[in-house]
Length: 251
Image 1 (tube, rainbow, N blue to C red):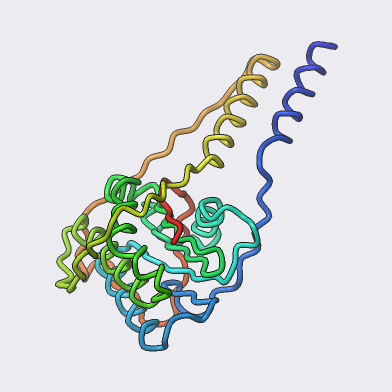
Image 2 (cartoon, one colour):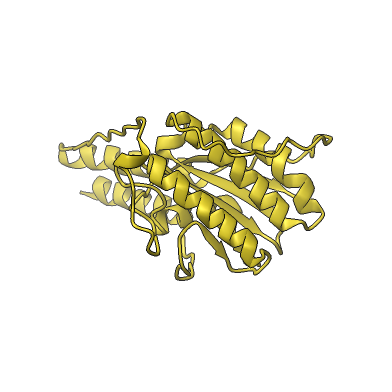
């Protein structure tokens, strides 16, 4: 009996060391595609991004969203972006095909979080190169409109191509620049939570002799624009909840 109590104490102590998430996210204002809380984009830039987001979703079901905030109040941008992706349900629940770009103007950081369903399309290395090629130089000069739009269009092109859809979008040429020297931020949150879960399940199995597991499947395929049209009313997230990967940069 004493052994069981010691084991349970160890579980609670280990879980207490895991990060506690207490992010507060604002209510969506209009379509999910652009949430410019920091107010750095012009109405014309917002409308262009909104139109691109609608077209991409209609053709592929994938959602590509942007969130611009004035500050993260000391929170790691990678954790914030992953949780925001889940909170707003970017992408479909079935395919987890959402992407969220978070820009913090005060912290001078940008991070792109991808859903599990788009990990193969946008692996971390490719996302990092997109940020280097299209975002960092503009953002260093406080040209948020150009940095966000160019990065959005590059992501838009990658996703559309993966679904077999040619958007005929004029993607800007990558900027010629020296390496920024910024390294992709490690996302420690998810690995730590996975370790917590594995540890707890192992202990419970050893204590009670019972365990359960469940599998998860995901699918991605080509969609035709006619098979995935949605109404032009205000659009929110579609239930996507899994953050697969991502990359970030300081500027």
